[in-house]
Amino acid sequence: MSTRRHAVVVAVLVCVGFVAACGGKKRPPNVASGGVRGGGAPAGRSSPSEIPVDSGPDLAPLDADSAAAEDFSTSDPATLEGGPLEDVLFDYDQATLGDQARATLEKHALWLQNHRSAQVTVEGHCDERGTAEYNLALGDQRARAAREYLVSLGVAADRLKTVSYGKERPLDTGTGAASFARNRRAHFVVSR
Image (cartoon, rainbow, N blue to C red; front, side, top):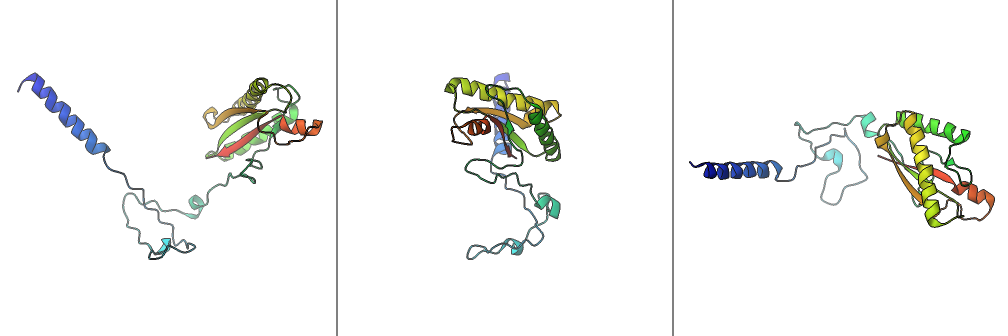
C-alpha cells in the first residue's frame, strides 16, 4: 500500500473513531432518592418513588445530607437583596475599606470557607452624584477592593467575580444623605 493511501486510511479510521466516541447523547445518571413522595405525577405516569431504578454503574444514591441543598437565595429575587452576605458601605467618593467594612468582610470570608460551593459576584454601586462614567469606575474600584480583601483572607479568587453598576441600580431611590449612604456599597450575589 502506498504511503499516501495508508495516510488516507489512517485519517478515515481516526475520524470514524472520533465520531463514534463523541456521537449520541449521554443519558443522565439515575438517582435513587429512597422513597421521596412527590406532589403528584402527570396523568399516566408513576410518582418518583414508584419508578423502578435499575442498579448499575451510573446509579447515584442520595442520602439525607446530599439531598438537602444549601439555599443561597435572596429574600427579594427582583432586587437580589437579602442574601446571606450583607452589603459593605463606603464613604463618599471613596473605594477604601473602613474598619466596619473589613469586619463585615471577615465574617463573609468565614461564611464562604464554610460554603465552598458558593460563587460570589461582588457588585460595586454608587450614589447618584457624578457622571455615569465616573460612577462606573468608582463602583469597579469598590467591588475590586472588597474582592481583594476577601482573597487576602483566604477565599479562592476564582470564586469571586466583580461587576460595576455605578449609579444605575440604587438600593434607595431617595435623594437625602441617608439614601446616598445606602447606595455607596459593595453588594454580594451568591450562587452555585
